[in-house]
Image 1 (cartoon, rainbow, N blue to C red):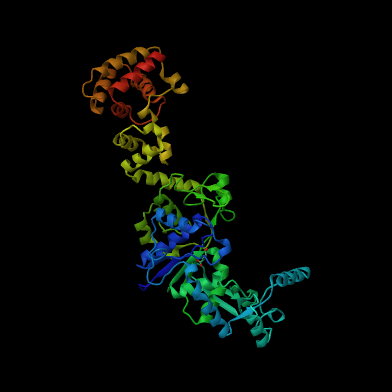
Image 2: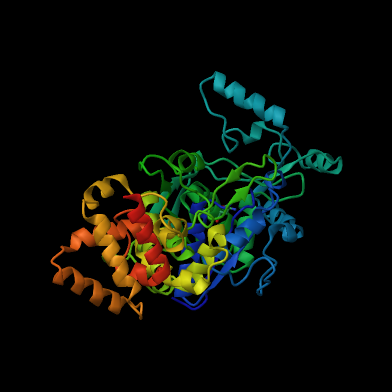
Length: 503
Ligand code: GLU
């Protein structure tokens, strides 16, 4: 592929970025980087009614957290910016006028009430009202009115929109990298509004003009934009511009596989559908995010990469570099991708093992006041021992609290199994051995305790089970010798004494 790949992620700041949007951004990023191209973030904020405070910053924060930086975008005016559409609004009118001049668009003056009446009228007759060649000559526009009438209306400042004039009886041939060839009968298309009386372009016009001016080579976006493709093709032709290539990514489906994933599915089943936590500026309603729920960005990216794409091999673990290397749009599926919240946990568990213990320890310490006074190096050693069993940092305390404080209770079922008549005397003997070990290392502990058990023919279970209960409170955790070493001699002896007293 030529070296001028330029792609864009073009969200509208109408609320928090949905996880599906993050997947679109990721696929654009992977494709750009694979082809040494440019990845642009374009903010499509021409619809003032849907603008939501904080949404743009959220999008930027989410991409930053994921680690998929844009080359051009907000506050990064790579050569063809600015990349916020509201800063480009002076640009679009000229293009709408161009289409009027070359006969591909027209002024329409119909009021909302008049259009509603037409819709109702059609419905009453069992028909659907479409604003196109079927009836545009019966409506109020520059095709049905005389040039003088149009001029008078414009001069009087009447409200108008500019509509695209879609052709009659034509078949459009569209091409999509993922979906192949698509044929569309123009008779089903309506004359979409391109420009509104508030002086702002609609999504369609601004999107096409910007993709052209920003020299976008590939448009990679969600399947929900596929119905707009026919109009976009026609707009390129109407301007006489070369088209980019298109790739429409499959929908992300509910965990059941039926229907599109929504925020409600997340709420119902207890998983986030947003990368970061979001507080609605109006209702103050809080939506949880993957970051705050304890997911690692690497896990999320690896998981999202597999929503609709696969490498064609058995390999599932891919870091970002490997994804860039393996990614191909031709390997993206047409059919919807089922969202499996358990699978992202599986990835998180995997990436947990790859995290640096010191960084995890800092995080763990910052989340638990019980750890405030404890040396972070000690915490890091413990994290190294237990993280194999953890999916989230929030699992750490339950897996490791006995390293920081003595157990408060002994598991009932385990106690029944472990405590016998001679347990108290065995534990007292063990304590006396420990007191006399000078070098309290794992090796010394193993050697002395094991030879005592073998010499006296005591049986390992009779010592190890109660000992573990004394230290942990349950029959779980890493090797007891490691635990004793970590908590030290004094604490080990104290916990054995406490157990003996309780028997
Ligand atoms: N602003 C549109 C959105 O919110 C962009 C669609 C496109 O990529 O063309 O998704």
